[in-house]
Length: 238
Ligand SMILES: C[S@@+](CC[C@H](N)C(=O)[O-])C[C@H]1O[C@@H](n2cnc3c(N)ncnc32)[C@H](O)[C@@H]1O
Image 1 (cartoon, helix red, strand yellow):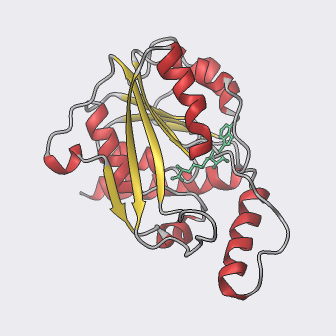
Image 2 (cartoon, rainbow, N blue to C red):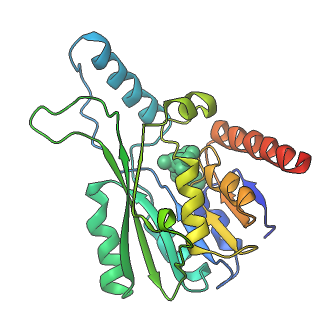
Image 3 (cartoon, rainbow, N blue to C red):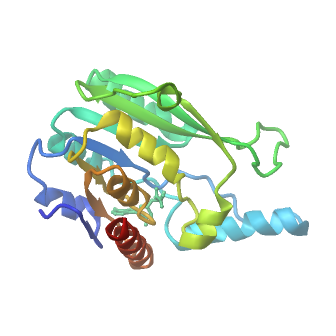
């Protein structure tokens, strides 16, 4: 399998071509297991925004979790278990069972705290954070400075990136770069098999790592390709 390339295919198919124990770090953001209730959410701008987001997630098949067999493939291809997984609260028990209880990995939780969440708190807490679970057995975690060692990343929800790269669940590039710096070395191979708009690949280029990416949706794959070629052009100019 070629490195520094992204593939427009189902990762469960593509992963089979990656040799055993060849990947240094996995960083994935699979579709969350989201409970969409459907129906009307009331009137007004906020209700309209929520319905628009739900529709976008449903239309792009981003509300159903993924085939758990992907995890077996990821464990097969990693040199040591060294994996970051974005998830929502409903998915945490499944990952703890798989990586902690079965594979005896260590766990760290990195939080993205959004300072401007939608003000929805009727009979619930507000949606102002996202979880990224970091599991390792061996693996590598060497933050080089105080900022990189923090486990809570605070920023606004990245509305501008969402608009720019047309992906509803895009993650902050700065945070992905920090995870890559902390848990891999220069020239290591980083795998993201749910690439979306290509954030992980762009972070790898900026941090001088090699990457492999899979994205099943042609629209997002094309966006990721464009982002990667733009960042490569900028890198060449420097
Ligand atoms: C949560 S998004 C990732 C967003 C990404 N972190 C970013 O910053 O743009 C998950 C992506 O996985 C893709 N996907 C879902 N199932 C897949 C599969 N079986 N193989 C490859 N990609 C898949 C979806 O199309 C979606 O773009």
